[in-house]
Image (tube, rainbow, N blue to C red; front, side):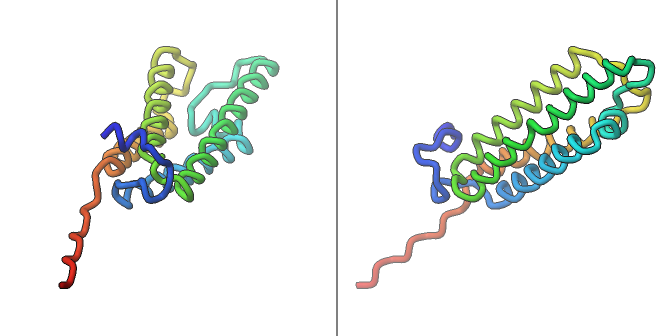
Length: 159
C-alpha cells in the first residue's frame, strides 16, 4: 500500500486504482474550484450564508479584515485544483497521495474549527454539511484509489 501512496514513478501507467477514484477526484476538484471562485467573488454572502459567520455588530474595519481573509482562503484553494488537474492529466500515480493530503487538510481544518469557536448563526450552516460530504467523497476516493483493478490474464503463447 505504501508503494501506491509513494510511487517510484509519477506517470499514468503507475496508477493501479479504480477508475471511479479518478472520477471522484475530478468531482472534488470541480467542487473546490467552484467553492474557491465563488468564495472570492461573493465573499460576504458565502461567509454569512454558507459558513454562517456573524458579521453584524462588528465595525467596518473588522468586517473588511474578516472578508479579506475569507477571500484569500478561498483563492488559496485554486493552486490545489491546478495541481490535482495536472495529476489527473499527466501523473495519475500521484492521485492516492493527493487523496491523503486533502483528507489530512480537511481533518486539520475540522479540528481547528472545533477548537476555535466563531460567532455563528444559530442554525447549522450549509457549509458544514458540504464539507462533511466532501470528507466522505475523499475517503471513498482514497479507498478506491488504493483498491487494485483486476488484471486480465495474459494470453498463452501460441506454439
